[in-house]
Image (cartoon, rainbow, N blue to C red):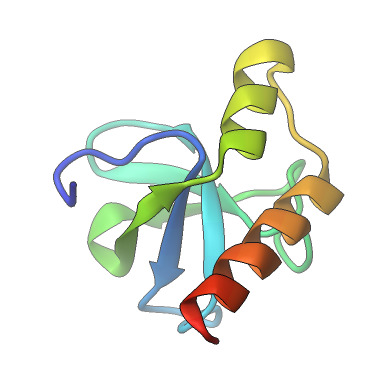
Length: 93
């Protein structure tokens, strides 16, 4: 699964100021870069462009975020925060 990031996929940031935090992929720029947001520090309207090599792709995808992005082209920050909180709690973090 590490080979191809998907919209709505959870990622763990490995490098930068946001290291060791979780985010969700909201767009794929090209094969090297994706746009991530967490709904808190990184909002939907100001996503962070990250190199895929600086992210640890998680095996889970947020159905709420993915479906919202496919239907309307956007997702609310509250939905991102909720999905990340639920994912982190399930992982025990």
